[in-house]
Image (tube, rainbow, N blue to C red; front, top):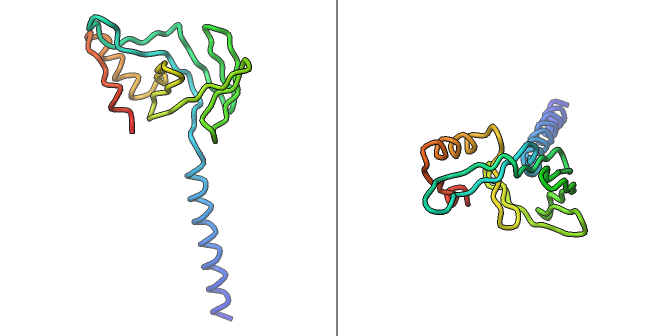
Length: 130
């Protein structure tokens, strides 16, 4: 009887551990507002364009400046809208869509780019790649 109880407790503990592991692997959280960012030409430094905005909530998103609404397939890493599919990549707080780079507003990376922008320094976007 004691052995059976130990097996049950062990089994329950094992299930809890698996549940935690599976939840942790649950995919990317894209929720937030992203501003387009880039290093300006002529060594003018990092720039955050707060007029080119992507807002994401759950599996839906909107490119605000173009009034484009899209859905998100997180398994395939694509935005789907206007009869087109656009692949995306999220590295830390840097969202790359097509050849455009966006930074999540309020993130540490956003603050770093803002600081570089105020000093006229370039941001090393390659450091966010993995």
